[in-house]
Length: 97
Image 1 (tube, one colour):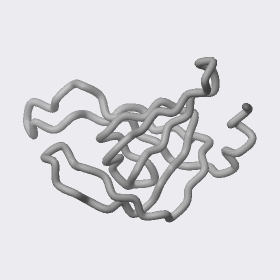
Image 2 (cartoon, rainbow, N blue to C red):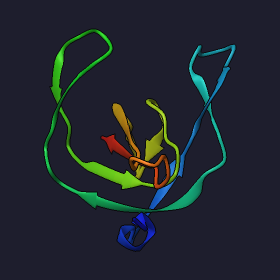
Image 3 (cartoon, rainbow, N blue to C red):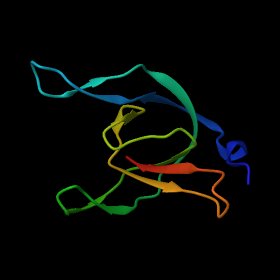
């Protein structure tokens, strides 16, 4: 299935690097880019890294590999789920903001 045809919106994406800033102890920001995606406002419950139940504000579907902690449209990615076709093609990511 061609998921690219469903990615009809644009979003600002800032990946966070693994390098820590020595002064603040926070990960450094990577190069800002624009990604194709589909954004909808469905609230979903997810478990944070501490096991606490939390509700997301938005859901973003994208073909770009995203990670927890990255920034999409000024919001931090709190949870990421990767989906694949049965034959291993057509990978897309569901990011909860």
